[in-house]
Length: 300
Image (cartoon, rainbow, N blue to C red; front, top):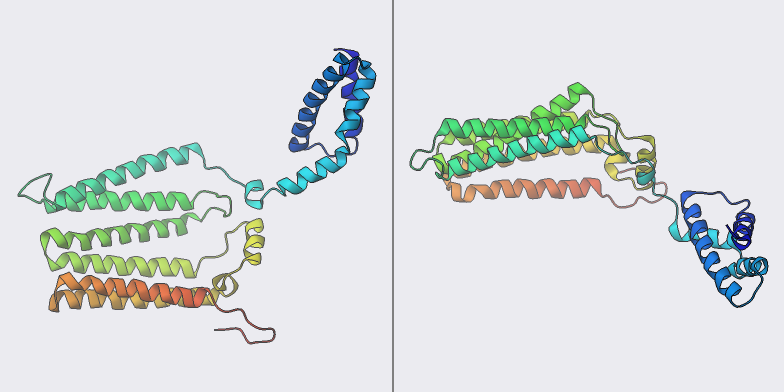
């Protein structure tokens, strides 16, 4: 190591004295070091004394404290989500992918059975039910397992509650598959079973959502308070929305069945579209309320 290089190290350490050495600052320091070495080499080749060349290069660098401050302002503080980030466990990712592939395969088999591709002219009902059962179980396991994992913003859900969400997911998936089963087999039993499963699923989801206690991490709670919606500020509003949702879908599914047996199944799906529209309008009305003026009573 030449004398000029030693001078660069010494002078650069003096310039950074009193500055907290973060990884970003260390990268900046090393970048400056490389630039200073190149500048000293240029000055030395022009006949400047190595020690003087080092001092001149440092002087040309300017105020290091100001450079570090500018860099900090440009980069900004590290986002809270990045500081508290939790990466998923590899084992969880692997099993989720495998179960998802199993569910996708079951869905494909059910669809091919419904359109009479796997067994032309036969349409085996039991095979369709079996495939639908595998799909429902796969969806339930994925949801339940996901809720048992710690995430960046949330602590894991308790085993019993996670199992409840898993059951509701399985019932909902089975209900949708049962309703879809009406299309190839044209039996009203598919709609009845599907409707019952869907309603039970909605009721369970609503109960779980209405009774869910806070599982957000403290930093996430602080972030949400800065950007709070009406459901966060008023848990009773979230509970009311759940009740409204259950009533809306009970009416929509009832109308679906009535229209199917009277007007025709080709038009019965309009009842489901209407139910979805009402639910979304209710959500928008309850979640995004106008800002209240100071002293005004809260909306209920």
